[in-house]
Image: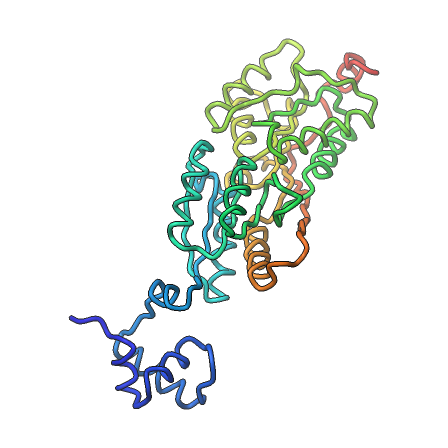
Amino acid sequence: MTRATIRDVADAAGVSRSTASRALSGNGYAAPEVRERVRAAAKELGYVVDVTARSLKQRTSRSVGILVSDLRNTFYAELASGVVEEARAHGRTLVIVDLHGDPEDELEAAETLVSSRVSGVIATPVSAELSRFLRRIGVPLIEVDRRFDAETTDAVVVDNRVAARDITTRLLRAGHRRIALVIDETEWTTGDERLRGYLDALAAGRIRRDDALIVRAGWDAEDATAAAVRLLSLRDRPTAVFAANNVLTEGTWRAAHDLALRIPEDLSLVGFDDAPWMSMVQPGVSTQVQDAGALGATAMRALLDRLDTPDAPVRTIVMPTRFLDRGSISTPADRNDSMSSAPRS
């Protein structure tokens, strides 16, 4: 069966090809009754706009590239979903590239997007190389979740430092003094700011930094579990853990279960980001929630704004977070001992 063309639609609707094109694209005037007639003919014939051909003709593109770290992680999946919904509302098509947790492939992935003639890119970047590469060839970039180029690239982020400080302060107020931080990295803005927020709260509470309680735990739940088991097996183990993302929270929860530590009776646990399993266990896991879908949707709108006004000042949009209390924080099992054994400045 031959694919219907714009000429077929125009003939069926009794209009010229240019009128049929205006009616379907919404660019230019077409009387309402003509627009309806053309669209009915297109539907009857099964006509689909050739976006690539139209982009080549107009030397513009309606497609947007999404470059995400790992769609297996619910945070990135929800973020991408937010981009998709907002793009659909604005008639944009998408090209999605998933790094599967391998940051070494970032520039190769960016080249793939550029070769697909995207008009702009939304990315959870892993280095400043991405912004330099895209800026050099004139493709707008919106950094989301992480930020590497605040001077020349728009970004959509949360205030990780304030959120991490608030989490740690909440644990201090519950009576904890040996509070561990389980974190994946501190080279990116997310990890660096969450570490700083944790240390800010300790300093405000006059608790000396203990590097034995700052644990770098890798990228997946298995590595996080192994690191958390080592941490929680210490003779002077922490009474509370702040796990700096949802994967690290899962690993810490598994480690506590493997060591027969009860949450929150034996160990208080707080995460950053949410995941479905956190509300399915008993008790649920308290966490600092950022709306990943809203981050993605906001990034899409920021990209559209940048495409409309390329010379506008660079901006960083800071989105809110909120604390979700599910009952995984308690006072230490022996509050007096935990307070007296804590190193103080």
